[in-house]
Image (cartoon, rainbow over all chains, first blue to last red; front, side):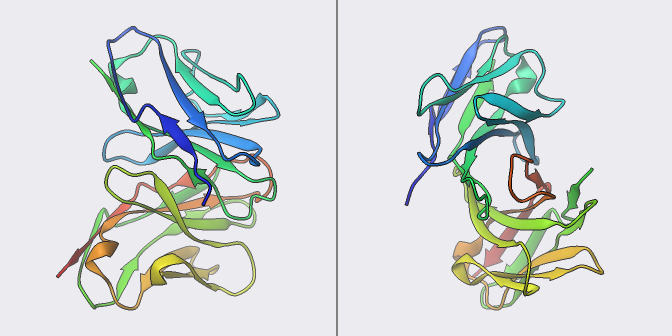
Length: 114
Length: 115
């Protein structure tokens, strides 16, 4: 069964550093998303991406965040200058054009900012 | 704005007993409803969805959910719980099915099935 792959599974970074979280969506999917989950809390929408541009973003997705699809397979989330409160599990998801089955999520990247 | 409420942080049930995990929603328009499960240190795994048609939908691992429009609910159920069902369960809603409108998640309910 096709999977969404996220790397790394765990990243520790110092406050103020830039991090890039990587995702490889399912190959025939056209819609891409990033969500985050602060430990023990709800899953929050960050951004959706289609046709090489952002479709929608939440209030969380401020100027410190950016997304990119640098080639035909990768979808990245960059946090320019990490803060302690960015520590969370970040999930990438993708969905097919017909979208009937919801999203397929990756296993997540646990980001720890120290 | 669309939202989802999962009123219970934790549900405990004995193995073999029926389980219910509650979810209510608020949307302007027709809701498209989903349940996801998260096992420890894993991603979100799709369980089932309601798009249209029969109000009772069946999904993976013997789970089912009933869409109730008058009560704006979409409770997850299983007739006989297994210890392996212990996980974090998320209800989610979208208004538009096709396109890039995001799923909005509830805060999750931790299900603990006791042997």
